[in-house]
Image (cartoon, rainbow, N blue to C red; front, side, top):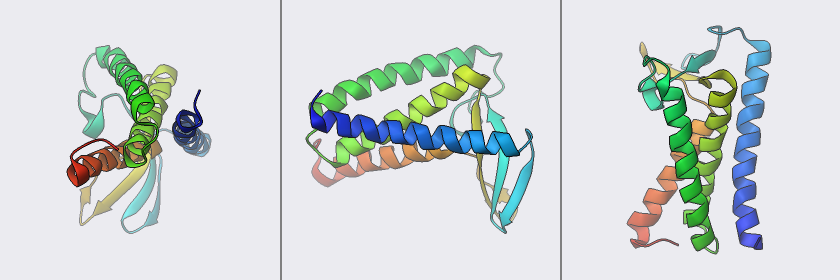
Length: 157
């Protein structure tokens, strides 16, 4: 495997390790539903999300677990193909690597718990952002980098 490809897959692996380590740390010290206020706008909270972003399909009958696993694995396969094509670049493969690590981190949760572990909760003036995790953050940053790359040059790098 070329060095560039190993570099980007290593970034994905780092995202997975950090994501799973933070979730393990949280689940070892919190009970499901328990929270800890750290600042007036930030809490740690231990929740399961059976849906996708913003709890989309969280209340479905259970089929969504396998749907989201299959979807994430399909997208991950496509990402690896794209990483091979663009491994020599910087912004695009970084974005792809972050999305890949985040997607696989959440797949591990779905396979292990049947849901994604979320624990970061931001709020202000009575309004709460849906809880999220390191994997979700990596996906968000990765997608932002991919969009930035497209708007910056209009072509992959």
